[in-house]
Image (cartoon, rainbow, N blue to C red; front, side, top):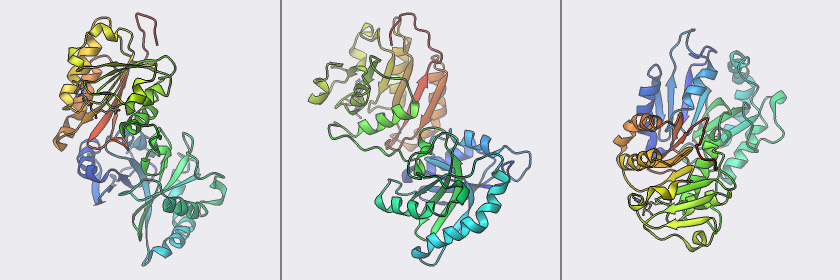
Length: 369
Ligand SMILES: C[S@@+](CC[C@H](N)C(=O)[O-])C[C@H]1O[C@@H](n2cnc3c(N)ncnc32)[C@H](O)[C@@H]1O
């Protein structure tokens, strides 16, 4: 039980990552007892002890889970014989069960001001999920109802979660907004590839840049390793960055036409390190095993004259067993002097995860962005 009296949590994730999240929970939350799962949805019972951590501390720890798209403190389950009856059951739940369950948490959190409704196995926002959210928002406690339930909330606001595991099985919970993904229902980054986007990779790097909150902007010097055809580079260029794109394969013409882009055609191992003397940010997306990616980044960050402030790169999980090694991979990056590291399976990562690493504070020997 959290110090605040709630003793179930539910987590959602990508369908194919359900077993990976289960393994991760064993490692990171050994005190939590697995209770129930459906594809993309897991519930756990927390131990019942007064001295256990507060709900706030629990959310901090849960926010570091790599494979969880969302984490909620559970307030209860709603079921009905037919889907049409669910909104009325929800309204009833909010009138009767919610006030009682929320009372012990009221010192730690503000009243919920948003509703997040989603289907864990298919969390992409849709007209149907927007309509459902609108209906449910009417049932928020009166004093808490926010005027704009669809705008992303601000840090610290509380969301009332409604995970529709099945049309007649909804799990209701809460989570405080902390970090990029927790602002969106089910932790699903609502991004759509721009019309001039050259690859799906635009979405994962746009998402990665928002999630990492790296201060990459006008004039930031970046290298994109494994850049072809160029979606990731486009996300950097749109911020005004100067990009060296490394790849033996061709870049899309629209990327090549950008005056801030330079194609270094070849494999990273074939290029002289002095080309990266001014580079501060390394982005990477090579379709190779994680250890190879790490070797490349280690060698680059350690090169004399190269001073890297931040890294943002994918690690491919060609075999699911590789997921076990992620903590070790993160430690390896830490040993290169990056003190802020996070890893997450992003909305637009498939069989891979994204690692973001920062040197903070950063004191370059040469002045450059
Ligand atoms: C998933 S694709 C990259 C997609 C790209 N990031 C985008 O935004 O469109 C992987 C790329 O890694 C490149 N690659 C693989 N090994 C490489 C290496 N040693 N050096 C540079 N690029 C490499 C491949 O040529 C391939 O184009």
